[in-house]
Length: 223
Image (cartoon, rainbow, N blue to C red):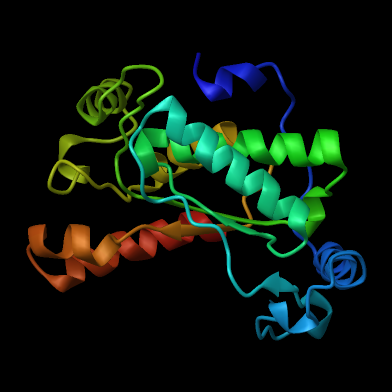
């Protein structure tokens, strides 16, 4: 059974990462786990009231086979690291391990919050979209997804670069919703546009075409 199906009837976890939550996590790490305060750094932001306290090291989920055994490795690593007090940054992408990486992160997050009292506002969740992902849990290849999206009028064949990447706003909207469902959250704190230049610039006629696509992608993200 896919790991996500164990939590398929759950409600999305509400909330987002906040300055208050990350400061609470950092303080608890120092008081309860003897973790030096230097373990947490504050990204420079224009508004000092929006400063986040983020762990120096986050958990990445790029490598590994799209198999259930790797799901449980990622799940256990994410859960134990969140509970350790030393790490509050989780990073994934919808194409990592054919969507299974996001789902394993989501399972760990659900467990940490609902069984161990970790708060959603203490955790900074990152993901990425742009690459067209396979779905290992449900037997759907990226080619099947492309055909489905074209048939539904979400994208055209011309919107797909090298048969692997798309940054059309409607595709990004579709993939954002898929990532939210995979991770089981209402909000993803940071969404990257994944390797856009590397994947698209060499197949477009000129850089102006690339920048036009890029501008439209960021217009979507900003709204």
